[in-house]
Length: 131
Image (cartoon, rainbow, N blue to C red; front, side, top):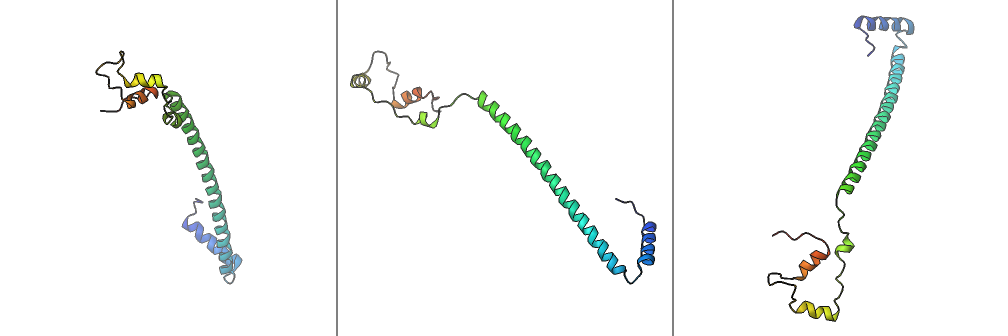
């Protein structure tokens, strides 16, 4: 990082011993260690804050893409019936129509079963059940 070689480090130690003195050297080293620790702590905190901001920006970008894709899917998908529409009860047939339903009609063929489930599926525009 600072590109300090062994000879340069030795020169700094010799100058520190001469200037500070051997008696005060441990105190000076402790003070220097504390300062270095504080600087590392501040730089780590700063780096963590920057990383959090980057993650939040990426998250917002991903949420925006998700919303766009969701809107595109919702526009492309056919409108499906809601839960209320699917569970709506059948209207009771009037007495005259009920008599027509119970007796075979001229419009129905012998192959048409006319089960209530088929009429319910036709009313809700549902596809037929799989075989």
